[in-house]
Amino acid sequence: DSGVTQTPKHLITATGQRVTLRCSPRSGDLSVYWYQQSLDQGLQFLIQYYNGEERAKGNILERFSAQQFPDLHSELNLSSLELGDSALYFCASSQGNPYGYTFGSGTRLTVV
Amino acid sequence: SQQGEEDPQALSIQEGENATMNCSYKTSINNLQWYRQNSGRGLVHLILIRSNEREKHSGRLRVTLDTSKKSSSLLITASRAADTASYFCATVDSRLTFGEGTQLTVNP
Image (cartoon, rainbow over all chains, first blue to last red; front, side, top):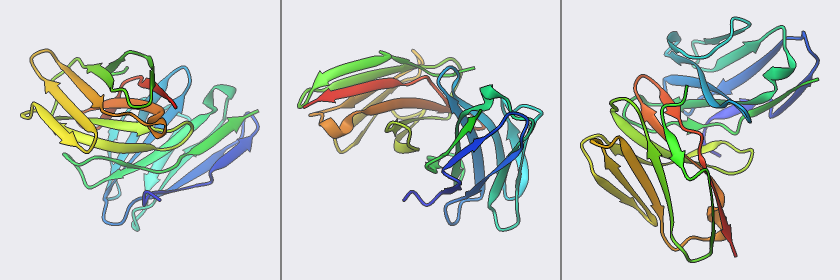
């Protein structure tokens, strides 16, 4: 157990649907990062939150959004899902630079 | 776009041998980190080396950093079957940017 909790572990949904992925960071970490991992794109940074505020944005589609709540858990919302959105979605947390990131075990999303 | 590029893409060795993986990156860095990922699992942080460090050790791991060449290497000594995984280097600016990884297979 890394200390970062992601739910659900697996999700199968149809095209056009909307899903929410949840992440609880490691205790004491204020930063939360979302990554997408697919076979053809590798590990892509999506977005970072720090203590409730968006800090950095990467290759996140407009159909995707995220937020970090006062208790520091974060949610990634994926809407109008397409087959190409099928991937592993990872959440990571960190105390900040220059510390390493702690990753959750991921949510495997399959869009059918 | 990927900041780091690992080389080789795949490496297959026998148990007990050493494994060396290389990483090249493009821009200035604050620090460089190596991670391991077992198939379909989350990434595990292995080691962090700061830009003013040249070498760092952690157990059977040895990492070097050459900022003039914008490259780093990860050496795993006396490899074990349990070391079979993908290994990624990641550079830090405002966030971690990962390379595409090296798939290491250690055969018993």
